[in-house]
Image 1: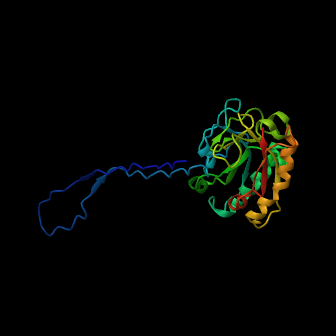
Image 2: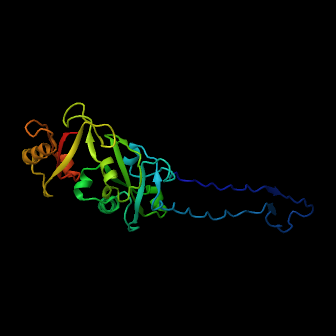
Image 3: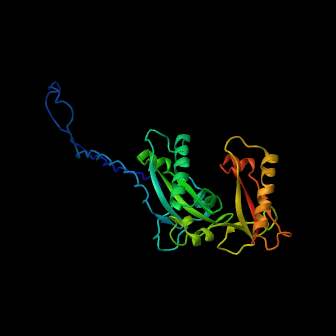
Length: 276
C-alpha cells in the first residue's frame, strides 16, 4: 500500500511597519520599540494518524496470476466468488505485534498454520493432497502497513494448471478432495512421461497422457541421498504400473524421486506414474 504524505500550508505573516515622527528635544525619553502589526498566526492542526488497512475477508476470492501467488504480499482486489477466480482465502490469522512482519518468526507461523489449515479446508487423505495440484500460499501485510498496526497473515488456496499457471477454481474448494469429481479434476497428471522433454505437470481435468498413481513416502529428517530415494521407488512404482495396465506383461511406468532442494522445501515423498 502506498504511503500517503500530508503537507501543511503555512501562512506567511504580512508585516506592516508603523513609524512615528517626533519633534522636540533629542533628549526625549526613548519611546520603546517600534510597534508592529502582524497577521494572526495559524497553528498547524495536528495530523490524524493513518488507520491500518483492514485484514482481508475470511473467504475473499481473487483473480491472481502465477507471479501474484509467489509474492510475499497480496495487493489484488477481491472479486465475487461466483465469478471466475483463481484463489480463495480460507483462513486469516494474527501474530504478535512485537514481531517483525518480514522476520523468520512470522514466516514460521504462517508456513506452519496455513498448510495445517489447508489440509482441513480441502479435505481428503494426505495421499490425495500429495497427488493433487491444489496448493496453499500465504501473504502478510507490507512493512509500511505493519508499521500502522496490521499484524495478520492470510492463507489462500490455489490450483496449478501447469508448471507456471494458475487454474480457475471450479466449484467449492472446501472439501474438494472429499468429492470424487473434484479430486479427479485437480489430480496430478502430465503431458508426457516424467523426465522427458515434453513433460509438464497439469491437472487431470485438462488434456494429459500420464497420470500420477501413488506416492512413495519417506520419514522426515535428513535427506537420505539420491541413491536411496531412487531405489525406494523401483518396486512400488513397478507394481502400481502393472496394476493399471491392460497387459500385465507389457506395460510402462515411471518414478520421480525428491531432489535435495524439494526435500528441504518439504516434499519428502516420490511419485509413481503410468500412461493414462
